[in-house]
Image (cartoon, rainbow, N blue to C red):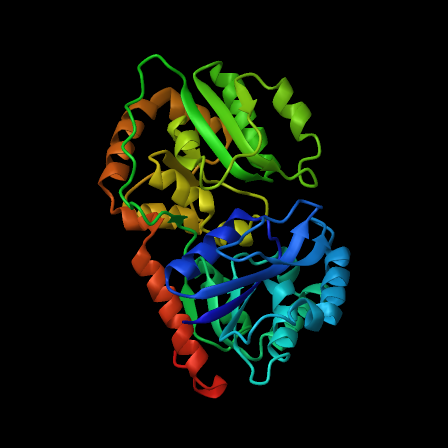
Length: 386
């Protein structure tokens, strides 16, 4: 059985639990070690094992995170002293890649290192001294990486390939919903004539431009649309989030939700799924394929994306969803004034018809991932096949 040490930046992130479950469903034995964000309690189990707590990091506090990683590196021998040698060490993002080399060196023979990069941070981009230093650090820490896991082809096309960051084969591992029981898209009831259209914006609520646009459209349409927000607001990006939402007509915020437990219920409540992000416009926001894209598709909410982004291309290539050329409050008002009825019926039918594997990680996906990791662990570093 393949043994995996999974180093993560946030033990409380639902995506970490999902990846651990995927690895175990594919036949691997998994130990998760990582940080907690902002004093949130670590889960009792990640997969079948208790996680190894490496300490606390602060969201948006980059200097504090560097210090926490440095401290964890010094204590790593003690923290990992009781685990058997893994076949593979997976580092989820750059700060954990910095720990992976040290972790691998604690064992008599080095495990293979795999780098899981699911976002390209803005500090890595451009030609500033900080960006060049960060990229140099990524290249240094990534010099022994055997495989790169990433969630969007645009990350390879726009960052890893042009900058030459990681000299290793890549595997695309999309942010699909983890549900081994069924991959069939949910069939939701038709929209009731006369009821307001409901737009759901779920997950990490960090984009102030999206919030402005949706609040303004809801105000101008005066009850013809309702905006439903769920998840964790990024108060460092939108410090007045609570006040703005409380003052906005036809807008409600329902707080955090359990992922994956609540996904079907919350997407059943909405007609449209907001899959637009301007938080890092021109960079990561153009390239990512977000969790909410797959969640909404799996549970039947019609996605709304903007043209020129990887999410927009994903939808256009499959002939599904609404891709906005005019991504503004005016564009939204025009859409719901003139075309919402026709578009919704048409796009809901297309979502029902699409292969459920587009949205859902199947057991075959899990086995394929573990097989690729196992093959990587058996290859000498200089002979890893592309």
